Image 1 (tube, rainbow, N blue to C red):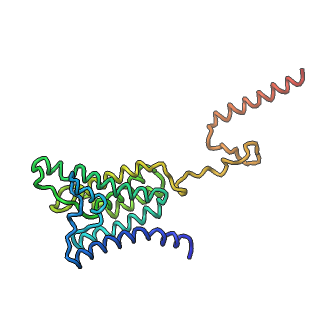
Image 2: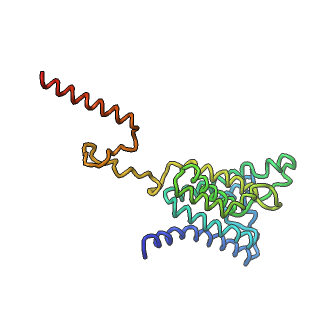
Image 3: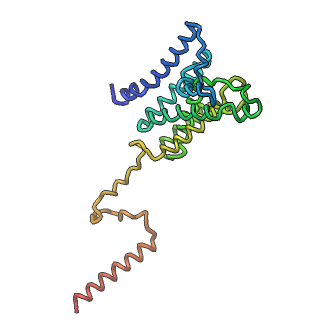
Length: 252
């Protein structure tokens, strides 16, 4: 097995483990007839703060679970493969900060101001984290501006652009706020880690950067494309003048 295949296998272990966990949680609900929504995230409620950790593990039904499982596996695997230096910290930040924002201001701007506590509801599902992972990859392309990150950002934008409709309150019963705050957090985390480049992202110095500057065995000067014709003419005239002054000094 070559190194790339081994790396791919190592990379998918954690995403696969997360998917197994959320499927097991849902199967427990179904088999035992449980409704674990009360363990979700209830904004601005002390008991609901546990949902910051637990809400992404709980789903309403198999359709909800499947809808989140596939992009969660793909996006987290991409980040672990291409950005291993920051992958775990990025995922953790997106996971926790998204939940924290929902807990602090969820059900508030479009609901709480008008109805008070009447429309407060539990938020469950991993979709907020999914949105955060997607915008992290796109944000990394914007902030790092190297070929790899830009290419990955464009791929994610092409395949998942339709999901961003979910950041608007268009469908009842959907935690659009988790989507919105997750997307915001993803961009923030990408910006925060923008300077922590992977080895393949670091600029490679030109081949002549470490050459001996006194070595003149070249057909063209090494800076042939860096100076104008006028600059070269002036340098040549100055060189001749120095040689002439040196010759005159030797003769006196």
